[in-house]
Structure formats: C-alpha cells, structure tokens
Image (cartoon, rainbow, N blue to C red; front, side):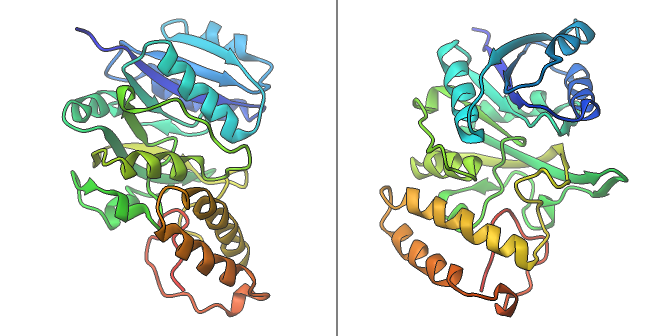
Length: 274
C-alpha cells in the first residue's frame, strides 16, 4: 500500500526570497509524490506561491497563534488528514534534492530520521555538514543523547506518524523541536542520523538561536530555554528536576560572561557545559 507523505512547514510575514529558495528546493525533490502542508500565520501573498509552483500540491492551513501552537496545529492536522509520513521543514531554509527520498528510505526501518545541516547566510554556505563534525553517518540517536542538547530540528527531521499521539504544546514553549523529540525518544522510538542528505539552515537574526555561536546574550537565552524545557519534562522523568535546579542556579548568575565555559567545537542546539 502506497504511503501518504506530507511535507509540513509554517510561513509568516517574511522575505519573499527565503520562500522562493524553499519552494524551489521542494520542486526539485527526486521523490515527487508528496503534499506540502503550509500553516499560514499571516503571510498575505500565499496565492503567489500556489500560482508559481503549479506542479506542487500545496495545501494551506490558515492559523495564527504562538510558534509552538502553530507547530502543534500543523502536526495534529497532518495526523488527522491520514498521512503516514511527515517531513518537517522551515520555510526560511532549503533542502537537498534527495531529502524526502532519503528520509523515506530510512523510515522503512526506523521511526525518526534526522539529517545533517549546512549553515549559510547572505554570503552563501560557510559550514558544510555541521552535525557530521561530531556524529557519524547512520548513527543511532537515543534519548540520553538529547538530555542536555539537541540536534533534532523542525527543518531536518522526518517521522512515521503512527508513532505520534495528539500533541499539546505549552504556548510558552520555545524549543518545540527539543521537547517533541525528547518525548518521542523517551518512548524508546528509534532515530537514525544521516549525512547522505541535508538541510541548508539559514543563519540570521530571526532565528530563535543560531547553532554554534556562544556569547553572553546567547548563553542567557540558552538558560531560559533550558528552564522551560526541563520544567515541562520534569513530569516525565525525575532526573529533569536535577537539571532544572542546576539551570535555575546558573540563571541566577548576574554576569554570564564570568561563567567558565568549556571549549565545545561545533556545539549543538542548547549545548552548554559549565
């Protein structure tokens, strides 16, 4: 039986060139039999997208809420619409041509696929296959790996939807991806990393946080994200209470520039060892 495949993204008032790069890469995918589900939070020119990309089956879900609730709405809808597979992507990123094909190949034997990231900005790609600096291709990623950091984004993952229950995100949640995949891996779902395809991950000020950079400002932001994440995860695993207490203590440090941060080459999202 043929699987129903959805590519899920959200859009909002943003640079039109970003959307063009995203949809151009979707049009070039080697696997063609998929729908694009778009949660539209206020982008006024959506009809220009559907008219330009007539070869893509684009379904709009108008919805305006917090970023976490927009993601919740999208995931729950693709589940209710009967899709078997969801490939997640941010509309300000773009994707290697084989991303959906490679994800489907690996989802035959695994529950979750997480692919590599290449970092780029207005000057072009400046860091190729960032995650591969620390993780080997086809490595199995378990729950323990993402206790205090994350590599699972909403732009470099694909999931078998029969493993996902109805989602209810806290409206104040910042690291939606970290929370979602922590819950899935806590249930002993299998995730595999691949660098045989990649997401081109845009680095600019509108990102919640860029990957890699560590400054006093980003450290404060990381501590805030960890406080929310650990606070929500405490009800699922007692160890999170210890992590929560530790981050509260660090967050009370008045001058984060005085924190002694060990040298982490190619740090992942929210990774901070003091």
